Image (cartoon, rainbow, N blue to C red):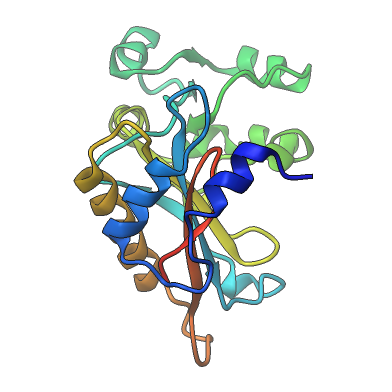
Length: 223
């Protein structure tokens, strides 16, 4: 059952209206009822069939202004030193010993960056890493020979995106206390980016709807 604060906030939103991005950002902030400075989230509904591999969107992008969590990065590689990796921003570093730790259930990281050399060993951990979305993947840029550059990119705000089972893409695009203009720039950049990734097999409408909301607040439609 919806709480009183949510219902009061929802009254401020016209569910039949499609708001401009700027209007929606201002309204998302106004209707946020959390005690903390929460995030502003976006949900983009796509006309894709996620049972078809060619229509599954997955990859990385960097928003103009980053408000997501700081990634905890594990590097499994031997082409660079631990000191070099950690200077670039890696939180954990190793080789076979880290693979053994993962096999034993250690998963206290958000991104795993590795070189092609280690993939035969890591691929055997698919049942552990796969369900958590932690398996290195060339589409995500996490299998690379440019390890240091990749660490810096993910530490500096590179975000992963993917369609869920229902064809939705979710991402944090701002904070309630961020500048309106920064959040607007992020939303417009993400929409343009997703539009550019339209699968060639899609017929008709591609982006079906777009909503934004504060972490604790009602949804506001912008498309």
